[in-house]
Image: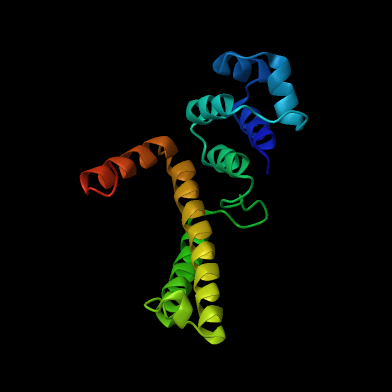
Amino acid sequence: MSFGQALQKKLDEAGQTQGAAAKTANVSGSLISKISRGTRKPPKDVMRTLTIHYDDPELAVAAANEATGGAWVPWLNNADLHPSSVAWKTREEVLEAYEATGAAPLSKRRDQLTESDMVKIKEAIREAVEAITALVHMVATMCKAYKISWTHVWKMHRMKLKESKYLK
């Protein structure tokens, strides 16, 4: 789902107009309309402002996809996103990733790998990406279901990483 589609969905859910989003982002209603219709790419500052303002996981995922050209988790729009269903699927995906990374010869250098080793490494990557997708959706559905701020969750996570000296 594009950022514009996710934004329009959020506006509809919140009972807000494109004009309200335009005012929030300090841009014209015409620009928001074009973004929603997909005829104009959203400027990064507009995406950032609206993502923070609406504090919606689906909108944040769409913004990340827009900014990276699709090199991020897609929003699962054809899956059961009830928190308990997502939690169950997430446990399954994380276990598969754990097993695949355990089977991959990650201690070898690239020049030591056989073709079979590369197959195992690619499988570990694929399983890890599936687990990441599941984990993002689990956090998103829990935030939505229990009215917890998506933005705050990530701010607290960054704070913890800084305290642990993983970030400068």
